[in-house]
Amino acid sequence: MNVQTDISPADDQAILDAISKWLERKVAPVAAQLERDDAYPEELVQDMRELGLFGAMIAPEYGGLGLSATTYTRIIALISEEWMSLTGVINSHLMMALIVQRYGTEAQKTYWLPRFATGELRGGLGLTEPDAGTDLQAVRTVAKRVGENYVVNGGKMWITNCIQGHVLALLVKTDVNAQPRHHGMTMLIVPKFNVETGAPLAGVKVGRKLSKLGYRGVDTGEIAFEDYECPADLCLVGGEEGRGFYMATGGLELGRINIAARGVGIARRALREAVAYSQQRKTMGKLICEHQAIQLKLGEMAAKTKAAELLVEHAARAFDTGVRVDMEAGMAKWFASETALEVATEAMRIFGGNGYSTEYPIERLYRDAPLLCIGEGTNEMQRIIIARQLIARSKA
Ligand SMILES: Cc1cc2nc3c(=O)[nH]c(=O)nc-3n(C[C@H](O)[C@H](O)[C@H](O)COP(=O)(O)OP(=O)(O)OC[C@H]3O[C@@H](n4cnc5c(N)ncnc54)[C@H](O)[C@@H]3O)c2cc1C
Image 1 (cartoon, rainbow, N blue to C red):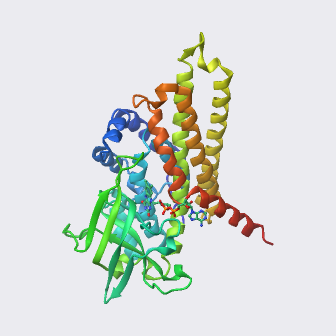
Image 2: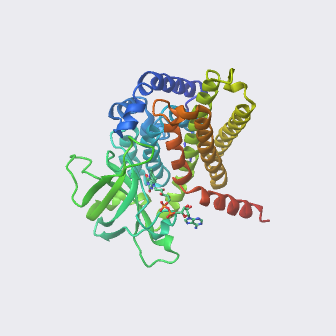
Image 3: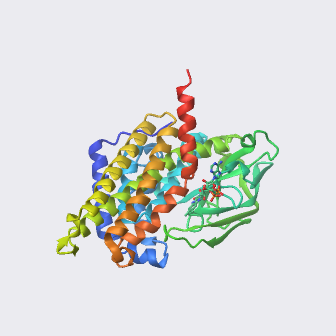
Protein backbone atom coordinates (compact mmCIF):
# COMPACT_ATOMS: atom_id res chain seq x y z
CA MET A 1 0.00 0.00 0.00
CA ASN A 2 1.25 3.48 -0.68
CA VAL A 3 0.15 6.69 0.84
CA GLN A 4 -1.64 9.16 -1.29
CA THR A 5 -3.27 11.98 -0.09
CA ASP A 6 -5.69 14.79 -0.38
CA ILE A 7 -2.86 17.28 -0.08
CA SER A 8 -2.70 19.30 -3.29
CA PRO A 9 0.45 20.38 -5.14
CA ALA A 10 -0.14 23.89 -3.80
CA ASP A 11 -0.04 22.52 -0.22
CA ASP A 12 3.10 20.56 -1.08
CA GLN A 13 4.74 23.73 -2.33
CA ALA A 14 3.71 25.55 0.86
CA ILE A 15 5.42 22.83 2.91
CA LEU A 16 8.58 23.08 0.81
CA ASP A 17 8.57 26.87 1.19
CA ALA A 18 8.14 26.62 4.98
CA ILE A 19 11.05 24.18 5.16
CA SER A 20 13.25 26.42 3.00
CA LYS A 21 12.61 29.35 5.33
CA TRP A 22 13.31 27.22 8.40
CA LEU A 23 16.58 25.96 6.87
CA GLU A 24 17.71 29.49 6.16
CA ARG A 25 16.71 30.99 9.50
CA LYS A 26 17.27 28.20 11.98
CA VAL A 27 19.51 25.51 10.49
CA ALA A 28 22.11 27.40 8.46
CA PRO A 29 23.40 29.46 11.41
CA VAL A 30 24.00 26.43 13.68
CA ALA A 31 24.65 23.38 11.49
CA ALA A 32 28.45 23.67 11.20
CA GLN A 33 28.97 24.05 14.95
CA LEU A 34 26.57 21.26 15.92
CA GLU A 35 28.27 19.01 13.40
CA ARG A 36 31.73 19.86 14.68
CA ASP A 37 30.60 19.16 18.27
CA ASP A 38 28.77 15.97 17.22
CA ALA A 39 25.86 17.40 19.26
CA TYR A 40 22.32 16.08 18.90
CA PRO A 41 20.21 18.93 17.43
CA GLU A 42 17.47 18.95 20.12
CA GLU A 43 15.96 22.28 19.16
CA LEU A 44 15.90 21.49 15.45
CA VAL A 45 14.24 18.15 16.19
CA GLN A 46 11.49 20.04 18.04
CA ASP A 47 11.13 22.32 15.02
CA MET A 48 10.84 19.27 12.77
CA ARG A 49 8.05 17.98 15.00
CA GLU A 50 6.22 21.27 14.58
CA LEU A 51 6.71 21.15 10.83
CA GLY A 52 5.03 17.74 10.87
CA LEU A 53 8.06 15.99 9.39
CA PHE A 54 7.89 12.94 11.67
CA GLY A 55 4.53 12.21 10.08
CA ALA A 56 5.49 13.26 6.55
CA MET A 57 4.45 9.99 4.88
CA ILE A 58 2.06 8.71 7.54
CA ALA A 59 -1.55 8.75 6.31
CA PRO A 60 -3.76 11.64 7.48
CA GLU A 61 -6.19 9.27 9.26
CA TYR A 62 -3.32 8.45 11.64
CA GLY A 63 -2.33 12.08 12.09
CA GLY A 64 0.37 12.35 9.41
CA LEU A 65 0.77 14.70 6.45
CA GLY A 66 0.28 11.83 3.98
CA LEU A 67 2.83 13.24 1.54
CA SER A 68 3.77 11.36 -1.59
CA ALA A 69 7.29 9.94 -1.92
CA THR A 70 7.81 12.50 -4.68
CA THR A 71 7.25 15.43 -2.33
CA TYR A 72 9.02 13.74 0.56
CA THR A 73 12.19 13.18 -1.47
CA ARG A 74 12.18 16.85 -2.49
CA ILE A 75 12.09 17.73 1.21
CA ILE A 76 14.99 15.36 1.92
CA ALA A 77 17.09 16.84 -0.89
CA LEU A 78 16.37 20.36 0.36
CA ILE A 79 17.36 19.58 3.95
CA SER A 80 20.50 17.75 2.79
CA GLU A 81 21.62 20.87 0.96
CA GLU A 82 21.89 22.48 4.39
CA TRP A 83 22.70 19.60 6.77
CA MET A 84 22.27 15.95 5.84
CA SER A 85 22.31 14.67 9.44
CA LEU A 86 18.83 16.09 10.06
CA THR A 87 17.40 13.81 7.40
CA GLY A 88 18.69 10.79 9.36
CA VAL A 89 16.50 11.72 12.31
CA ILE A 90 13.35 11.62 10.19
CA ASN A 91 14.26 9.05 7.51
CA SER A 92 14.99 6.13 9.81
CA HIS A 93 11.94 7.04 11.87
CA LEU A 94 9.68 7.04 8.82
CA MET A 95 11.04 3.73 7.58
CA MET A 96 9.99 2.25 10.91
CA ALA A 97 6.61 3.97 10.73
CA LEU A 98 5.97 2.84 7.16
CA ILE A 99 6.63 -0.77 8.13
CA VAL A 100 3.73 -0.45 10.60
CA GLN A 101 1.61 1.44 8.07
CA ARG A 102 2.23 -1.08 5.29
CA TYR A 103 2.23 -4.35 7.20
CA GLY A 104 0.79 -3.74 10.70
CA THR A 105 -2.58 -4.87 12.01
CA GLU A 106 -5.28 -2.20 12.33
CA ALA A 107 -4.80 -2.22 16.13
CA GLN A 108 -1.05 -1.69 15.71
CA LYS A 109 -1.58 1.17 13.26
CA THR A 110 -4.06 2.85 15.60
CA TYR A 111 -1.70 2.46 18.55
CA TRP A 112 1.67 3.38 17.03
CA LEU A 113 1.10 5.65 14.04
CA PRO A 114 -0.46 8.69 15.76
CA ARG A 115 2.41 8.66 18.27
CA PHE A 116 4.97 8.33 15.46
CA ALA A 117 3.28 11.06 13.40
CA THR A 118 3.67 13.74 16.08
CA GLY A 119 7.21 12.67 16.93
CA GLU A 120 6.12 11.99 20.51
CA LEU A 121 7.65 8.55 19.89
CA ARG A 122 10.64 8.61 17.57
CA GLY A 123 12.81 5.78 16.39
CA GLY A 124 14.51 3.90 13.60
CA LEU A 125 15.24 0.63 11.94
CA GLY A 126 17.26 -2.04 13.78
CA LEU A 127 18.61 -4.45 11.18
CA THR A 128 22.40 -4.48 11.29
CA GLU A 129 24.47 -6.56 13.74
CA PRO A 130 28.23 -6.95 14.11
CA ASP A 131 28.12 -10.02 11.83
CA ALA A 132 25.09 -9.17 9.73
CA GLY A 133 25.09 -6.11 7.44
CA THR A 134 24.77 -6.87 3.76
CA ASP A 135 23.95 -10.44 4.73
CA LEU A 136 20.85 -9.60 6.74
CA GLN A 137 19.79 -13.22 6.96
CA ALA A 138 22.78 -13.81 9.24
CA VAL A 139 21.02 -11.85 12.02
CA ARG A 140 21.45 -13.57 15.39
CA THR A 141 19.09 -11.58 17.61
CA VAL A 142 16.35 -14.03 18.61
CA ALA A 143 12.80 -13.58 19.86
CA LYS A 144 10.93 -16.38 21.53
CA ARG A 145 7.19 -16.47 22.09
CA VAL A 146 6.39 -17.00 25.78
CA GLY A 147 2.65 -16.77 26.44
CA GLU A 148 1.40 -13.36 25.27
CA ASN A 149 4.91 -11.90 25.01
CA TYR A 150 8.10 -12.11 22.98
CA VAL A 151 11.39 -12.41 24.84
CA VAL A 152 14.26 -10.86 22.90
CA ASN A 153 18.00 -11.55 23.22
CA GLY A 154 20.79 -10.18 21.06
CA GLY A 155 22.55 -7.01 19.95
CA LYS A 156 22.31 -4.52 17.11
CA MET A 157 24.98 -2.16 15.84
CA TRP A 158 25.12 0.95 13.65
CA ILE A 159 21.54 1.82 14.54
CA THR A 160 20.61 5.44 13.81
CA ASN A 161 18.35 7.05 16.45
CA CYS A 162 18.82 4.17 18.92
CA ILE A 163 20.16 6.46 21.64
CA GLN A 164 17.94 9.55 21.31
CA GLY A 165 15.00 7.62 19.89
CA HIS A 166 12.39 5.72 21.83
CA VAL A 167 11.41 2.72 19.74
CA LEU A 168 12.82 0.51 16.96
CA ALA A 169 11.54 -1.76 14.24
CA LEU A 170 13.73 -4.72 15.10
CA LEU A 171 14.61 -7.56 12.75
CA VAL A 172 14.91 -10.83 14.71
CA LYS A 173 14.99 -14.56 14.18
CA THR A 174 11.97 -16.44 15.54
CA ASP A 175 13.12 -19.70 13.96
CA VAL A 176 16.89 -20.11 13.83
CA ASN A 177 16.65 -23.40 11.93
CA ALA A 178 14.39 -22.20 9.11
CA GLN A 179 15.49 -22.84 5.54
CA PRO A 180 15.71 -20.65 3.60
CA ARG A 181 16.97 -18.53 6.49
CA HIS A 182 14.65 -15.59 5.81
CA HIS A 183 11.59 -17.73 6.54
CA GLY A 184 12.63 -17.61 10.20
CA MET A 185 12.84 -13.80 10.34
CA THR A 186 10.30 -11.54 12.00
CA MET A 187 9.82 -7.81 12.56
CA LEU A 188 9.00 -6.52 16.03
CA ILE A 189 8.24 -2.97 17.19
CA VAL A 190 10.18 -2.57 20.43
CA PRO A 191 9.92 0.46 22.70
CA LYS A 192 12.69 1.29 25.19
CA PHE A 193 10.16 2.25 27.86
CA ASN A 194 6.56 1.59 28.79
CA VAL A 195 4.66 3.80 26.37
CA GLU A 196 1.74 4.31 28.77
CA THR A 197 3.70 5.12 31.94
CA GLY A 198 7.11 6.21 30.65
CA ALA A 199 8.79 3.74 33.02
CA PRO A 200 12.00 2.16 31.64
CA LEU A 201 11.71 -1.44 30.47
CA ALA A 202 14.07 -4.08 31.80
CA GLY A 203 16.44 -5.87 29.44
CA VAL A 204 17.25 -3.12 26.95
CA LYS A 205 20.60 -1.40 27.14
CA VAL A 206 21.86 1.34 24.87
CA GLY A 207 25.60 1.17 24.18
CA ARG A 208 28.07 3.71 22.94
CA LYS A 209 27.39 6.42 20.38
CA LEU A 210 29.66 5.63 17.44
CA SER A 211 32.15 8.24 16.34
CA LYS A 212 31.77 8.89 12.62
CA LEU A 213 33.61 10.55 9.73
CA GLY A 214 30.51 12.56 8.80
CA TYR A 215 26.75 12.40 9.41
CA ARG A 216 27.55 13.70 12.85
CA GLY A 217 25.08 15.09 15.38
CA VAL A 218 22.53 12.37 14.69
CA ASP A 219 23.20 9.39 16.96
CA THR A 220 24.25 6.05 15.51
CA GLY A 221 24.94 3.42 18.11
CA GLU A 222 24.71 -0.02 19.63
CA ILE A 223 21.76 -1.48 21.47
CA ALA A 224 21.51 -4.81 23.33
CA PHE A 225 18.54 -6.89 24.48
CA GLU A 226 18.71 -9.37 27.35
CA ASP A 227 15.48 -11.15 28.22
CA TYR A 228 13.65 -8.03 27.04
CA GLU A 229 9.87 -8.61 26.91
CA CYS A 230 7.25 -7.01 24.69
CA PRO A 231 3.58 -7.88 24.12
CA ALA A 232 2.96 -9.85 20.92
CA ASP A 233 -0.30 -8.11 20.00
CA LEU A 234 1.32 -4.66 19.76
CA CYS A 235 4.83 -5.66 18.77
CA LEU A 236 4.65 -8.52 16.27
CA VAL A 237 4.16 -6.56 13.04
CA GLY A 238 1.19 -7.90 11.11
CA GLY A 239 0.57 -10.51 13.80
CA GLU A 240 2.60 -13.04 11.83
CA GLU A 241 6.07 -14.54 12.21
CA GLY A 242 8.38 -15.22 9.25
CA ARG A 243 7.74 -12.05 7.20
CA GLY A 244 10.42 -9.83 8.71
CA PHE A 245 12.92 -10.07 5.87
CA TYR A 246 10.23 -9.17 3.35
CA MET A 247 9.19 -6.17 5.49
CA ALA A 248 12.80 -5.03 5.90
CA THR A 249 13.54 -5.16 2.17
CA GLY A 250 10.20 -3.46 1.41
CA GLY A 251 11.15 -0.67 3.83
CA LEU A 252 14.58 -0.35 2.25
CA GLU A 253 13.03 0.47 -1.11
CA LEU A 254 11.89 3.86 0.13
CA GLY A 255 15.06 4.13 2.23
CA ARG A 256 17.12 3.87 -0.94
CA ILE A 257 15.16 6.58 -2.71
CA ASN A 258 15.70 8.76 0.34
CA ILE A 259 19.43 8.08 0.35
CA ALA A 260 19.46 9.05 -3.31
CA ALA A 261 17.62 12.28 -2.44
CA ARG A 262 20.28 13.07 0.14
CA GLY A 263 22.85 12.58 -2.61
CA VAL A 264 21.01 15.09 -4.78
CA GLY A 265 21.08 17.60 -1.90
CA ILE A 266 24.82 17.14 -1.33
CA ALA A 267 25.63 17.36 -5.04
CA ARG A 268 23.47 20.45 -5.57
CA ARG A 269 25.06 22.29 -2.67
CA ALA A 270 28.61 21.34 -3.68
CA LEU A 271 27.92 22.46 -7.24
CA ARG A 272 26.39 25.77 -6.13
CA GLU A 273 29.32 26.49 -3.80
CA ALA A 274 31.83 25.56 -6.50
CA VAL A 275 30.23 27.81 -9.13
CA ALA A 276 30.09 30.75 -6.71
CA TYR A 277 33.70 30.25 -5.60
CA SER A 278 34.93 29.94 -9.17
CA GLN A 279 33.35 33.33 -9.90
CA GLN A 280 35.29 35.02 -7.10
CA ARG A 281 38.70 33.36 -7.03
CA LYS A 282 41.31 34.67 -9.46
CA THR A 283 44.52 33.03 -10.65
CA MET A 284 46.82 34.16 -13.47
CA GLY A 285 44.78 37.38 -13.72
CA LYS A 286 41.52 35.54 -14.45
CA LEU A 287 38.56 34.24 -12.50
CA ILE A 288 39.06 30.50 -12.21
CA CYS A 289 35.64 29.93 -13.86
CA GLU A 290 37.30 31.25 -17.02
CA HIS A 291 39.89 28.45 -17.00
CA GLN A 292 38.78 25.63 -19.25
CA ALA A 293 40.01 23.00 -16.78
CA ILE A 294 37.52 24.31 -14.22
CA GLN A 295 34.73 24.59 -16.80
CA LEU A 296 35.19 20.93 -17.70
CA LYS A 297 34.66 20.03 -14.06
CA LEU A 298 31.62 22.30 -13.63
CA GLY A 299 29.99 21.00 -16.80
CA GLU A 300 30.32 17.40 -15.71
CA MET A 301 29.22 18.14 -12.13
CA ALA A 302 26.10 19.97 -13.34
CA ALA A 303 25.08 17.24 -15.81
CA LYS A 304 25.51 14.46 -13.26
CA THR A 305 23.65 16.38 -10.56
CA LYS A 306 20.70 16.92 -12.89
CA ALA A 307 20.74 13.26 -13.95
CA ALA A 308 20.69 12.20 -10.29
CA GLU A 309 17.76 14.53 -9.63
CA LEU A 310 15.80 13.01 -12.52
CA LEU A 311 16.52 9.42 -11.44
CA VAL A 312 15.29 10.20 -7.93
CA GLU A 313 12.14 11.84 -9.28
CA HIS A 314 11.57 8.82 -11.55
CA ALA A 315 11.97 6.33 -8.68
CA ALA A 316 9.76 8.35 -6.31
CA ARG A 317 7.00 8.68 -8.89
CA ALA A 318 7.12 4.94 -9.56
CA PHE A 319 6.97 4.26 -5.80
CA ASP A 320 3.87 6.47 -5.57
CA THR A 321 2.04 4.25 -8.04
CA GLY A 322 2.24 1.41 -5.50
CA VAL A 323 4.35 -1.09 -7.43
CA ARG A 324 7.66 -2.66 -6.22
CA VAL A 325 10.49 -0.43 -7.42
CA ASP A 326 13.69 -2.27 -6.46
CA MET A 327 15.28 -1.50 -9.82
CA GLU A 328 14.29 2.18 -9.97
CA ALA A 329 15.27 2.72 -6.32
CA GLY A 330 18.58 0.88 -6.87
CA MET A 331 19.43 2.98 -9.94
CA ALA A 332 18.64 6.23 -8.14
CA LYS A 333 20.54 5.19 -5.01
CA TRP A 334 23.64 4.03 -6.84
CA PHE A 335 23.88 6.93 -9.28
CA ALA A 336 22.95 9.75 -6.90
CA SER A 337 25.27 8.59 -4.12
CA GLU A 338 28.24 8.13 -6.45
CA THR A 339 27.44 11.54 -7.93
CA ALA A 340 27.35 13.15 -4.49
CA LEU A 341 30.77 11.74 -3.68
CA GLU A 342 32.22 12.77 -7.03
CA VAL A 343 30.73 16.27 -7.06
CA ALA A 344 31.81 16.94 -3.45
CA THR A 345 35.35 15.81 -4.32
CA GLU A 346 35.47 17.95 -7.45
CA ALA A 347 34.13 20.93 -5.50
CA MET A 348 36.96 20.44 -3.02
CA ARG A 349 39.49 20.56 -5.85
CA ILE A 350 37.91 23.74 -7.24
CA PHE A 351 38.19 25.33 -3.80
CA GLY A 352 41.90 24.39 -3.66
CA GLY A 353 43.31 24.73 -0.12
CA ASN A 354 40.11 26.37 1.09
CA GLY A 355 38.22 23.18 0.24
CA TYR A 356 40.22 21.46 2.93
CA SER A 357 39.44 24.12 5.52
CA THR A 358 36.70 23.71 8.13
CA GLU A 359 35.82 27.37 7.51
CA TYR A 360 34.12 26.44 4.23
CA PRO A 361 31.17 24.04 3.81
CA ILE A 362 32.87 21.77 1.26
CA GLU A 363 34.77 19.54 3.68
CA ARG A 364 31.51 18.62 5.45
CA LEU A 365 29.81 17.66 2.18
CA TYR A 366 32.93 15.64 1.34
CA ARG A 367 32.73 13.80 4.69
CA ASP A 368 28.95 13.24 4.53
CA ALA A 369 28.85 11.83 0.98
CA PRO A 370 30.56 8.41 1.38
CA LEU A 371 27.90 7.13 3.80
CA LEU A 372 25.42 7.27 0.94
CA CYS A 373 27.43 4.61 -0.91
CA ILE A 374 27.21 2.29 2.14
CA GLY A 375 23.86 2.77 3.91
CA GLU A 376 20.54 1.08 2.92
CA GLY A 377 22.43 -1.55 0.92
CA THR A 378 25.92 -0.91 -0.39
CA ASN A 379 26.45 0.30 -3.93
CA GLU A 380 28.11 -3.00 -4.78
CA MET A 381 24.78 -4.68 -3.98
CA GLN A 382 22.71 -2.05 -5.79
CA ARG A 383 24.21 -2.90 -9.15
CA ILE A 384 23.54 -6.58 -8.53
CA ILE A 385 19.92 -5.78 -7.56
CA ILE A 386 19.48 -3.67 -10.71
CA ALA A 387 20.88 -6.45 -12.90
CA ARG A 388 18.71 -9.13 -11.28
CA GLN A 389 15.59 -7.01 -11.80
CA LEU A 390 16.59 -6.30 -15.35
CA ILE A 391 16.97 -10.00 -16.06
CA ALA A 392 13.73 -10.93 -14.24
CA ARG A 393 11.72 -8.26 -16.05
CA SER A 394 13.16 -9.29 -19.40
CA LYS A 395 11.95 -12.88 -19.08
CA ALA A 396 9.09 -13.67 -21.42
C1 LIG B 1 26.47 6.01 9.69
C2 LIG B 1 25.74 4.72 9.52
C3 LIG B 1 24.41 4.62 9.89
C4 LIG B 1 23.74 3.39 9.80
N1 LIG B 1 22.44 3.32 10.24
C5 LIG B 1 21.84 2.10 10.26
C6 LIG B 1 20.52 1.96 10.81
O1 LIG B 1 19.87 2.92 11.23
N2 LIG B 1 19.98 0.71 10.88
C7 LIG B 1 20.65 -0.39 10.43
O2 LIG B 1 20.11 -1.48 10.53
N3 LIG B 1 21.89 -0.28 9.88
C8 LIG B 1 22.49 0.92 9.79
N4 LIG B 1 23.76 1.03 9.26
C9 LIG B 1 24.45 -0.16 8.79
C10 LIG B 1 24.57 -0.26 7.28
O3 LIG B 1 23.30 -0.53 6.73
C11 LIG B 1 25.62 -1.35 6.99
O4 LIG B 1 26.88 -0.83 7.36
C12 LIG B 1 25.58 -1.74 5.53
O5 LIG B 1 24.43 -2.48 5.24
C13 LIG B 1 26.81 -2.62 5.16
O6 LIG B 1 26.96 -3.68 6.04
P1 LIG B 1 28.39 -3.96 6.70
O7 LIG B 1 28.88 -2.69 7.28
O8 LIG B 1 28.24 -5.13 7.61
O9 LIG B 1 29.34 -4.35 5.50
P2 LIG B 1 29.56 -5.83 4.92
O10 LIG B 1 28.26 -6.50 4.72
O11 LIG B 1 30.58 -6.51 5.77
O12 LIG B 1 30.21 -5.51 3.51
C14 LIG B 1 31.61 -5.24 3.32
C15 LIG B 1 31.88 -5.07 1.83
O13 LIG B 1 31.59 -6.31 1.12
C16 LIG B 1 30.65 -6.05 0.07
N5 LIG B 1 29.76 -7.21 -0.04
C17 LIG B 1 29.19 -7.90 0.97
N6 LIG B 1 28.44 -8.91 0.50
C18 LIG B 1 28.52 -8.85 -0.86
C19 LIG B 1 27.97 -9.63 -1.95
N7 LIG B 1 27.16 -10.65 -1.73
N8 LIG B 1 28.29 -9.26 -3.20
C20 LIG B 1 29.11 -8.22 -3.45
N9 LIG B 1 29.67 -7.46 -2.47
C21 LIG B 1 29.38 -7.77 -1.21
C22 LIG B 1 29.90 -4.81 0.52
O14 LIG B 1 29.33 -4.14 -0.58
C23 LIG B 1 31.02 -4.00 1.17
O15 LIG B 1 31.76 -3.36 0.16
C24 LIG B 1 24.42 2.25 9.30
C25 LIG B 1 25.75 2.37 8.87
C26 LIG B 1 26.42 3.57 8.99
C27 LIG B 1 27.86 3.65 8.56
